[in-house]
Length: 216
Image (cartoon, rainbow, N blue to C red; front, top):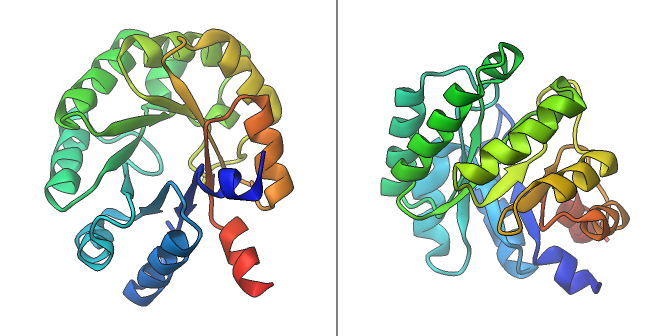
């Protein structure tokens, strides 16, 4: 896989709590320059970024981020608000506590509700794999697939761990054929990204890869 192909799979990300408008616009410039898949940014900057890039770049944002324990209604409101401001893609965090309680019906219903609120936009579901057992991950592969999400995503990058190759391979075995995989959290080099794509990832969430190219 060429460097250009890898770059086209990257959601160029800036979700830091100190992110400024200027940093978001720089992120957009970098993403357009390298033809990234999208910029993934805080919801408060969607309108700014959309007005800045127009149709040159997809705008992705996060919902229920990073802990996932907002109510379903709040996540649906966030989603509708994000789309009204110009978001093209939605990355939502599941309620991990409900997974630990074994209430997969709750998780399914919530994903379905956000799926409906997303109005046909790309929906990625963050399961925070570092907090889960393999059994829970396998079950969530089915739940995310059945709920109609476009992607299952490994991590927020704000918890105790990020993406692992083992998780990508596990997801690949258990998601439906139409469900794609996004690896995020700790992927910092082009070599890392290539390894995750080779393992089965379709998208890469990363803040460092394009930044590194800018420095060279």
